[in-house]
Length: 137
View (cartoon, rainbow, N blue to C red):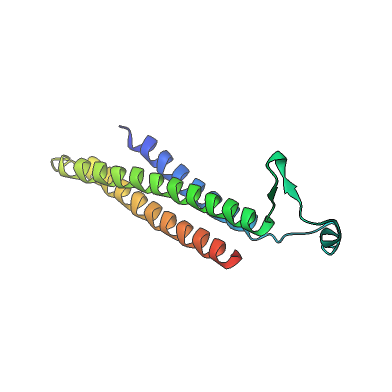
């Protein structure tokens, strides 16, 4: 594989992790806004969700949505981390098989450096997302 292509993949993964982490933090940190006074709901009784006659619990539904979003983001960040570890292994193999060629050695070192930086960013993104979501709850 061309080192330039791997560099672009690393930069893309880092940028996407940052956007996903910061974007989800901004999205999940917004507060709930009610258009009407909540006391009106008590006058009319419980609200039925659908035709099943189940009483709506908006707080529970919001908590479920937030938990689903958190799981999806964590799974996505885990997949990116697995790809990054695979690239780290590839960089190690590239370094070991360089056979003293300075250009290949330099390419392998750069790849390993980019992957390590990417893993740090992925880890920080996971911390930011989980901290933000737990602060919302």
